[in-house]
Length: 270
Image (cartoon, rainbow, N blue to C red; front, side):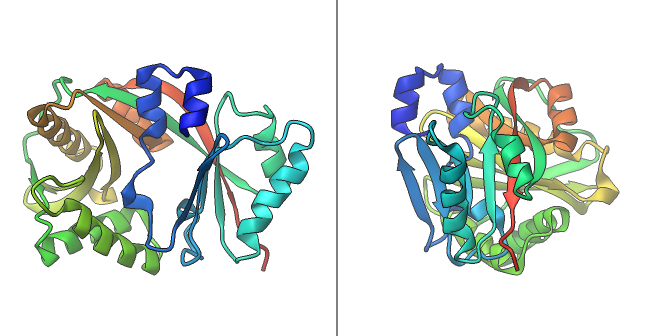
């Protein structure tokens, strides 16, 4: 959330942690343009022609008098470059029917649930599951992580290449910004999870469990390791944004539901 919007809304600290969770260097390519002004936070990435999440409107502040023209103007800025677009719409987003307007323009929609968790949550690693932190200097370890994540998310080739390079950078050094974990079930790679370290919190992201190993405690074990790592670092709060399938599990594990929102994806016309 932009500083301007935060100051106007007087956002409670917990809500601010969750709102700002997805904002981070892990999503920014070298050519990404960040627009963070006048109530907007959005990214435009000329090289990401097949990955809408790299061209995302996280927060918006549309013209109240003529929102439709403003919507068309913003979408056109992306589509004229041949770029797909993701637009996040929250329960408080104005106009209230923005989601319907985007659907009328041909958007597809997916639901996301946002959570907050205290790292003191006593999750345990499940028997038969082992979790290891990926060494950023290990090409093999990073490759296994990306392959596991890509197996669940079907990343475009250019996005996969970007993440290999960026994750290596963010995980390196004495004070890494990112931590990656691989989970093994009975010795076989079964899932992965990541987290971004922020000033006073963390954001849990980039998680996947391969279909053959779901419901075997892999996701729980990955989260348990992440929370334990954060406790050791003195970080008390972590946010997470989950699709409907993952949301069932994080609620069962004890994560605190904060709000739900929709992501609308708009592809450029051929």
